[in-house]
Length: 279
Image (cartoon, rainbow, N blue to C red; front, side, top):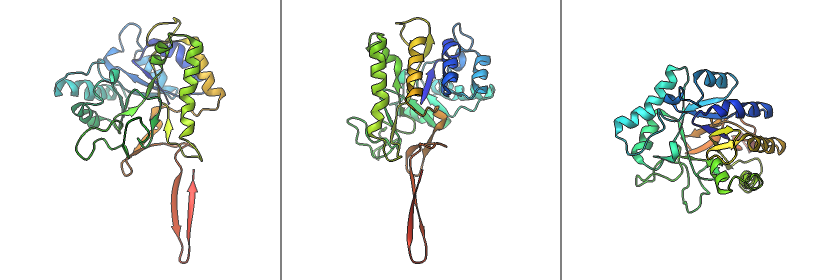
């Protein structure tokens, strides 16, 4: 899954043409009160994105969230949803600024009142059943444990991987970045087999631009290499609107996808039972 935070102008100037070139769709998490800032996508840019099939979702009103009162949280989180509605968008997914608040019960409770799913960090893979994270003993994606403690990964903390942190860790060396990028993508293969998808990477970008070595801005040539790698190696790319949550099983699932988790069902006849396995 491809996601972009902060509605930077480079995302429409440089990222969008490359997404179109390779036939990819992505989710753009927009800061509602930042659409008039210099260097930001405005509502016309966002409308053009939506018209071309991109997913537009919520990233607070002003990109602030820590140590806030409930009134302030309702403004940042709920007010953002209302702001989107006023501009013709039904935002159902939320992204925490800086991952801030995703482990705070009050913040998560507020997010849950307004959104179906929320995205957080910082993991190379997101496990659809929330099993597989290091030093984590979860058995499903319930929001809270039986004692009322927040689970590490849950419906409102879908774990993602910030590609820009990889760039900084590799000192903006494109050869090292591409090697680590491919390692992250291919790490899912050991969890996905026989048509059953258990783990996927949710990649987070910010700006895409001409300059190399700028934090939270991927150089356009590097971004082109990464998108080409996805395309040439046959990766199925979807936006976060393709992620659903099953409240009965407390697990995530992939919507309307040929790569979704296999479903088993059983039809019982008078004298025999037949089990079907369906992609």
